[in-house]
Image 1 (cartoon, rainbow, N blue to C red):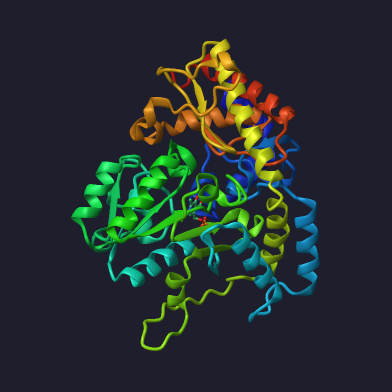
Image 2 (cartoon, helix red, strand yellow):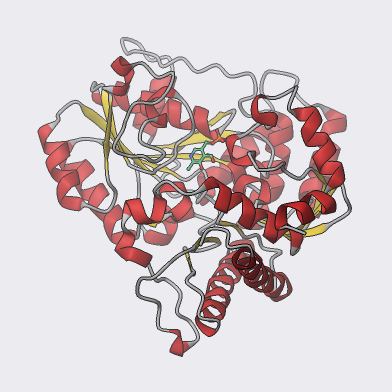
Length: 452
Ligand SMILES: Cc1ncc(COP(=O)(O)O)c(C=O)c1O
C-alpha cells in the first residue's frame, strides 16, 4: 500500500468532509496554509499539546492555532474566562471594563506600548500601523523585507512569498505596488543606501525574528541597525510582533533584544486564540487617531475592536504570560526539539536539518551544507546556508511537502508544513514522539522515492 493509500484509509471521516468542502470553499479550505493533498484532516477537539481529529487520532499539534495558543489548547483559565463572559455579553457595542484591563496588561508587558489601539486581526493592525506612519512622517512609501509576512492587505502582500524577484501580486494594482519598497533582510548597508536614496519612505516594518516566523532568522544586531537607521533617516520603525509578541518573551522580541520600535503590531496570543489584534506604540504617533484641533484625524472604526469575548480570553492569557513561565517552557521545548532532531539527523546520517529560534522550529530537507557542532549537547542557534533567502525561503515542492505531512500524520504529529509552533504544554514526551515521527516519515518517503 502506498503512503497516500494508507493516509486515505486512516482518515476516512476527514476525507468525506473534505469532499463536501470542495463545493463550499475555493480549494476546499478557509486559509491558504490549510491547503493539503489529497485532503486535509478535520479537528474535533484539542487539549494541551494535542488535537483530536474526526477519525479519533490523538495528534501532537504544531499548528497551535496558527501560533496563537502559546498556553496550549483549552487552557483552563482561558476557557473559564470565556465561558463566564459568553453568558454575560459577547458584544454589546460601546465600551467595556474588559477592554481597559486588557489594554493595561498590554501596556505593562510591551515596552513600546505607550498607547494601545485594538483591531480585529493582525492584518488590520499592520494596515493601521502603516497608515499612522504615513500621517506622522508625511511620506507615502514604506520599506519591508523579502519573505516578511504582515497579513494580506494590498501594500504588505508584495514581496511576502517567493519568487521574490517578481513584485507583481495578483489583484494588487501596480500603482499601489509602487509604494512598497522591498529589499532582502540582514543587509544593513543596502538598507542604509535605500533609505538614503528615497526620502519618501515613511516606515520600516519587519518580523523581528525573521520573515515567515524565522525562515531566514534575524538577530538583535540587525534590529539595532534598523533602529539606528530609522532614527538617522526619519522612518517610523514598526515591529510586527503578531507571532513573536508574548511568545519570544512576555515583552516580545523587543523585550528580549532590548530594541524599542516606534510601533508594534500584535494579534494571536494577544487575544488568547480568539480573533483580535492591536497596534501599540508611541503616544505622539497613535494620537493621530484622536480628534485634535487643526490636525488630520485617522479614522478607525472596526466592529470587533476590543470586543469583550476576545478581551476575556486575552486577559486570562496575558496574566499567565506575565509570570514568564509559559514563554520559558515553550522556548525550552523548542530548543530541545531542535537539538534532538539534529542529533537524530546526525546519528542516522540524514540530509535534513532543524533550526529556528525560541518556540518555533523549521525543518530543511535535502540539506547538504555545514552542520551545527553536536558535541556540546546544545548546538542550537545554527543558521543554515548562512541565512540565504532563496535557499531557506525559496519555492518548495508542494507534492513533497504534502507527502511529508501525510507521513507525519500517520505517525501521530500534525505540522502545518516543514516546521511549526510549540506551546508551554509540549514536554519531553511530545518531543520524543515528534523526533520518532520525523525519522519514520523520512524513511517512508525514501521507501517510495518521494522527493529524491
Ligand atoms: C507576522 C504576521 N503579521 C501579520 C499577520 C496577519 O495576522 P492575521 O492573520 O490575524 O490577520 C500574521 C499572520 O499569521 C503574521 O504572522
